[in-house]
Amino acid sequence: MGRLFVVNLEGKVYSCKHCKTHLALCEDIVSKSFHCRHGKAYLFSKVVNVSSGEKEDRHMMTGLHTVADIFCVGCGSIVGWKYETAHDKNQKYKEGKSVLERSLVLTEAITGSAMAPMLVGVMQMMFD
Image: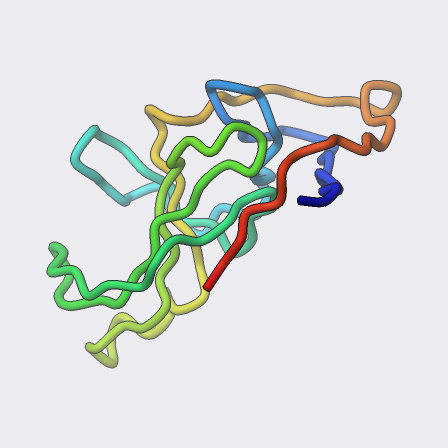
């Protein structure tokens, strides 16, 4: 058990639809042309306030990839996945990047005064 610092972002923010924890900035979108089982998804160069699940190989529309589901640290909800390894050389640009599913996130504009840093008490997830 421990305390977890939650990163608060400023600007056009994508946040968890369940608890509104900030996840990414609009300016970090690499591509809006991704799709998932539930509709649209966006590829981001950087996300915050997420934890990763187990790595697994998945056959996707663009071939075989090693990915890990990502979860909101605020509430534990799945919000997308992270590309760990792309097995096709044309897909290597995805490695290390994360996909947020549009049906699982909200968009909002955040400005200065709303951005006071917060220390949130959360049970820290234990990893093997």
